Amino acid sequence: MEHNIDVVIIGAGTAGLYALSQVIQNRKSYLIVQNGELGTTCARVGCMPSKVLIQAAEDYHRRKSFEREGIEGSEGLSVDKEEIMEFVRELRDSFVERVHGNNAKRLKDHMIHGQAEFIKPGQLRVGDDTVNYSSVVISSGSTPVIPAAWQSFSDRIITTDSLFEMEELPESMAVIGLGVIGLEIGQALARLDVAVTGVDMAEKIGGIEDPEIHQSVVDTLSREFPLWLGQAAEVTEEGDMLRVTAGENTVLVDKLLLSMGRKPNLAGMKLENLGIELDQQGVPIHNPNTMQCGKQPVFLAGDVSGERPIMHEAGDEGRIAGTNAARDSIQAFRRKTPLAITFCDPNICTAGATLSALDPDKIAIGQVNMAPVGRALIMTKNRGLIRVYGDKKTGKLLGASLFCIKGENLAHLMAWCIQQDLTVFDLLKMPFYHPVIEEALQAALRDLAGKVEDKPGGMLDIEKL
Image 1 (spheres, rainbow, N blue to C red):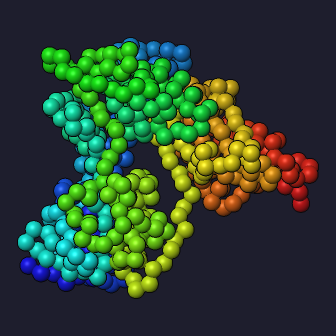
Image 2 (image 1 turned 60 degrees about the vertical axis):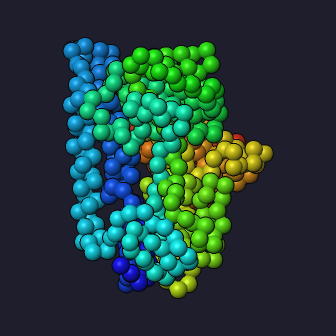
Image 3 (image 1 turned 45 degrees about the horizontal axis):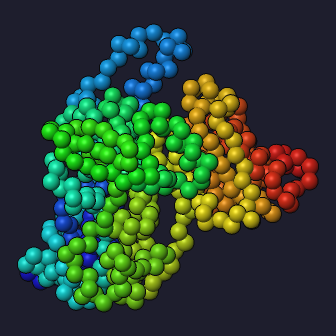
């Protein structure tokens, strides 16, 4: 069958669906090509089911503070690992169904299933269907990386694509790769009485660039499960179990959870037939402000780009790609202030520029340790550190790195203020209630303000009439 379409969208995940909304607004004809299961990565195997598991783990872990607070009987609590996984899947299915329900009408009669193969610019094939198009959005997502050498025991390897299908959690597990996913799931499983060992060949974990924050994270999380850093993992079979070795460390485990990154779903598309430039990983080189690949009417969006694999970024990229795919002229868009959150307890967050992107001779850093913060002490959540970065001369806010309770909320505040080009002095004139976690941020801002060269006269916290 032959189709003549204005815009083809390859992949109906978050980025693809946001692109679709723009195509529909511009009243263009469209076709969705979906290779695999419907339902966004976020809803099926990412953001949402992982947070259900994390919340259950945090609720159970909370029992360790009960005795100190005078609440008795915590020793009688236990985990039903099968029930927990059933609960995770129940909520996961509701999230996926919501995505399906919200998009069923838009997708009906506009979707074909299968692998997209580009024949030439303006034409692709899906099975027996040939599609002629004016523009195309590639939003095909990504897939977890599994080393070829470990395929022989793949039945004992878990990724986030399969984790939530487990009927019951294992007794022991090694988490290989301590990025965002590895840290979040590793801590959650450890709190649910799984014997977890975390392994990463890198010295730094979680994508954390600030050395002070990184040390605080390692010191805190290693209290809950061992972290083996700086040595590559070697895995061998030993009876019904797997032996994981990293340097001088070794452990026997039931399962491996691999969180070693994700690769873009581009295999088989025959991108070479498009005449666009590819990077060393085979990903089309594109403009992040237009999402266009070279001069062709080809646009990239979402995890497939490998740049900002975060749901809200995928949504923005989808909107940009869909807008430009549906219009005659290309429009560049300003990207939002970077914001990243790892939902460990405490949260690990960055907002704005990372430390490595800043000139150390031109910035000042304010910080506060969470240990004495009153509200955090009351909550028995007083581990961690907050660091804020500002221009040394003017006090303009540039970035922040946080490892603290309610970091997910504080990081939003910082990202909003950075995007508004506010200074540390602007923030200190804002109200801070007592006692709240925001007071810790206030303390870090005061520390930063004291290091800025061009300070306003008089009080820093109260604006003159």
